[in-house]
Length: 105
Image 1: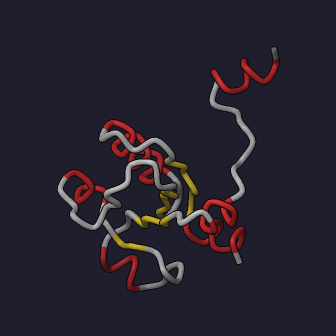
Image 2: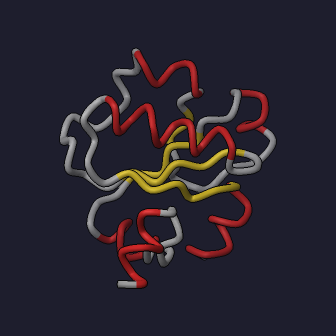
């Protein structure tokens, strides 16, 4: 019962990001090109938040895991919502890129 309540309120256990990457997952960094140039996770794709609506760089397979990240976690949360509205099923908000980098490193 508590697990259902936690999930409804948005409190769920963080996914295993390394496992998602092993499954072929992609990290999408939604910061600006300038922010991305200042530092980023190796192998991540830089698609700005506004570019998500028209990006050809997004995976064609909508069941492929996608982990979003940005500077603080706010834009990546918005990116998660946008991607889910586009039919992507396995989208996870990784929060800030530095925090995510520490979790997968």
